[in-house]
Amino acid sequence: MAKKVVATLQSSGKDFAKVIRMVKSPKTGAYVFKETVVPNDKVKEFIAGEYNR
Image (cartoon, rainbow, N blue to C red):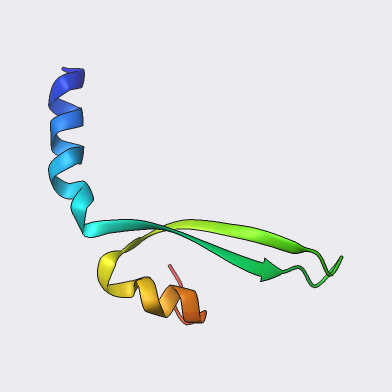
């Protein structure tokens, strides 16, 4: 049963990308990393800060 789930994720996982963006924390001023899985057509919007899930 686990193999069936993995096979399903592999076929549909090509439409998404894992994006990591560096954001400056308003509290401490240090940089933190924001990591999200977004659809391929929304990657540029996420990097620009316009994409909200």
